[in-house]
Length: 269
Image (cartoon, rainbow, N blue to C red; front, side):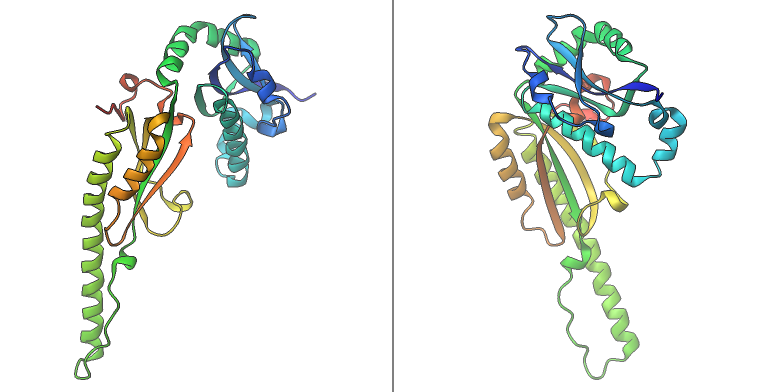
């Protein structure tokens, strides 16, 4: 018989008892049904969980799975799917990918111990969503079209001239990116109530052309979301070789932990 453990997705507020119906039929990690764990029949702070095979989520298995991008992507998609379903109906505190407990009783004990802190944070995050802001540098896109060399210029000199132009274009693109980053952040912080600086994405995590140099998350009141997105994109216009990408709205993945408990966070004014 397969040993099962409890995979936890998020903490949420279920004030009207509607979340069970929202999750009905929704496949979680390993296609397992999602259920809610609470500290009592009338408790409004809950944890969404699924039963998953222990053999796939113990420490040794997880180390192996970290090398399996297909497995990681499947788990991440299911994790995100459940959180987004919860966020459509309630304020949520997303938990980290592959957060597991021995059983539901362990989840219940954790919830009982931290229920007040969870409830306070859920109240603080009500009616706010996360937006991602990334800035990319694409030096090649900033290069001006190459003019044909003069007839009396040797191939060697023409090559050196091209290399010098490429180097200057790269330097200019990074200067433009610094200025764009200042303008974008100044604009974003006029709307945001909190900000998290993530490490720039590299390799397969970086989407699209160019090098990711800024990867920030902002917590924005829902009522300001449209203006936030439009003004941030506008602030990043006009910089050759620089691309600004705004994504969202998301559940507040980056803000489940209060700012004072996270050294990479900075609260917006």
